[in-house]
Image (cartoon, rainbow, N blue to C red; front, side):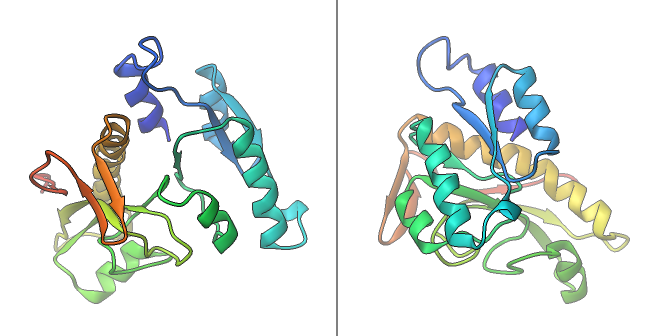
Length: 202
């Protein structure tokens, strides 16, 4: 989330009336990202899932709060909740997520441990469009990093995270510049030769 905010700031998009971060919304009141957002003068809201009887009720309230800010696009960042079909349909083709693996490999949690257990030699991250199916939406951009012989979960996670901070703002940039075509056949980015970032960090 910080990387997305910094990208907007560094490009001076708000002053140019190109784009702005409308709000940062979390289901955790103690999320550090809320403090950062407030320091940047960005509106924040908290919708705690524990306050609701089921996912449908939570998602309905979350949708209501998001829609108060009338965003053109929604970027999920560290939002560890399974979303209902009604919610994902409401934001169809304008909601993105970043996942710490090269999808479709290692969906869900503990992706770095799963990659090490599987013995893969390449790991990475994926920015994808959000659909009703968990970690299954069309891929926008992926990163690849080598898995080293002495890697543990922490070292591998840190190397993947460094690429996440590059590829997620890149997707935001593509969206703001109108380059993302999202149709029933997937997502393609116009005027871009590759939708893969290969890290040279070894």
